[in-house]
Length: 234
Image 1: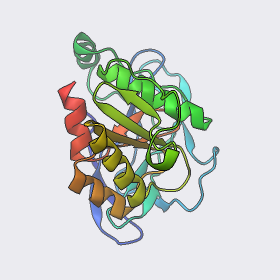
Image 2: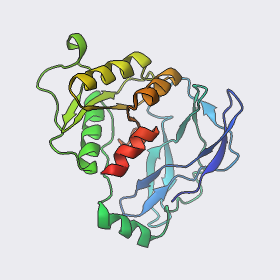
Image 3: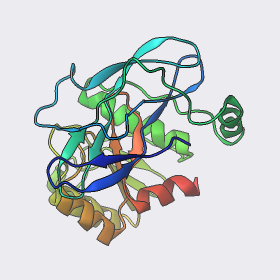
């Protein structure tokens, strides 16, 4: 497992432990982005395709690839980008034997890069199928309160919202999804590309609604305990 590094939020000054993301290289080795301890993060004011990616070389095969620049959502509401040591080869989260042990239970997830809103829904759909949910599909017509198209995916026991916008998902979005899930006797699950407001995260915890964030490679990450429980049950 990748080691956590301390991160100081430039907005509130608090220190948080942060575990750098790990992605599957084309050679099959797990690649952990080399985030330097003590590096100074930058607040995310405006996202662009160029500043959202960083070039990192795989320590296993030597290939250099483009990977999403790691971000951290502070509890104060700030979203910051973390500097990556591009000159350092990215090592794996453990040995190749550990990667092989993971494959005995589930093959490595292969994300799809997100360039459009439709790509974001496809990425969430593939992730849920990878977790083992059956019949993950798009609704035949818009669903949700007043036909707002709130629900983007359906699965056995799940109603799923995918927010591909560049603004954090709001409390209203979380509450609407939760109410719709109650009406369907299902679990509401939310995926967001830009993260969530502090109030939305707190409300989701109160409602026990799983929250995931996605980066531009299409790799979702569990953001709260409910999401981690959902992943752990599959």
